[in-house]
Image (cartoon, rainbow, N blue to C red; front, side, top):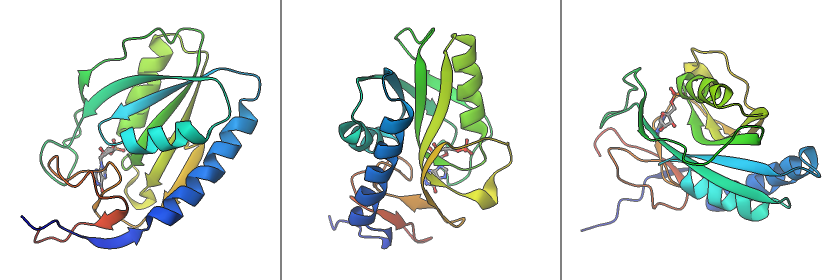
Length: 176
Ligand code: IMP
């Protein structure tokens, strides 16, 4: 089976440089604090892992698995929690680590969940943002790249469960 190599939108080198910048900003802003990374599965696992390795703070990690896309290229508008946070986030400083903010629905959903669970502070780090698609107001505190409204894959992002292993961010061709 041939391995699909989509058109490069953002190279591995560019991703690494931006992650270094974000990690520096996070380390400075949370100096003398302990931070909980909330890794939003499945898409953010590679970004979260690379970001964690570059942050010079004591960090712990929690996971939540959400789905809103099914197997398509459009959000269903309904978020399903496939696996909830298992640790205690009450009184903790939490950084939501997302792969991409599109409509903003997922981030709003996560922020209210974390508030309910009693998090002390909540901020957002996202690898990508599609500002053209945003419907729900939400601030992204640490953003690596803004992109146009194209469906992207690679570096953790999938289409119908595939292509997460591609080491850069590519654009999915309609025919694929
Ligand atoms: P939102 O709730 O509309 O902001 O959507 C966020 C979620 O949609 C992300 O965490 C991704 O799982 C998914 N998503 C949005 N755009 C893309 C894309 O271009 N490629 C892959 N997944 C995407």
